[in-house]
Length: 123
Image (cartoon, rainbow, N blue to C red; front, side, top):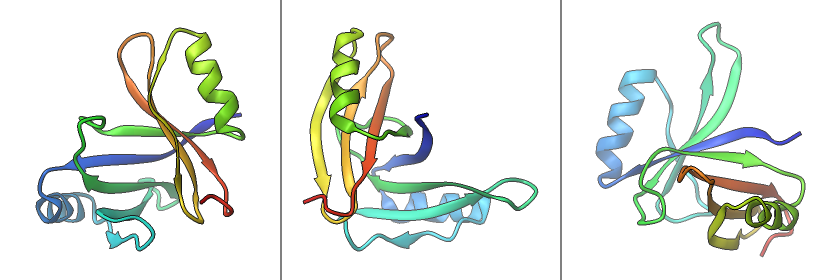
């Protein structure tokens, strides 16, 4: 079943955002080499159990707020479902080479989200 697996925090000033979140929550934020302008971290629950991953990235017009990523087994299937159910696809299926595919979408209430399919063969 699809689940929230990752979230992204857009930032105008990457260093300022990294400083804020690392000091606030103790997140160790590292550059993600496969994607420019993208810094990744892992979260933990209050009892220390592993949580989901997150990232800080340069703000884009399509990504104005913190964005939840929903992991799916077939991005093509879910892009079609978004449109069938009255949502909109803002950014069509796009690759992060060697990592997976994403698509920025909007639900029927105007909320933005990302669907993500992990695929080591993405290119």
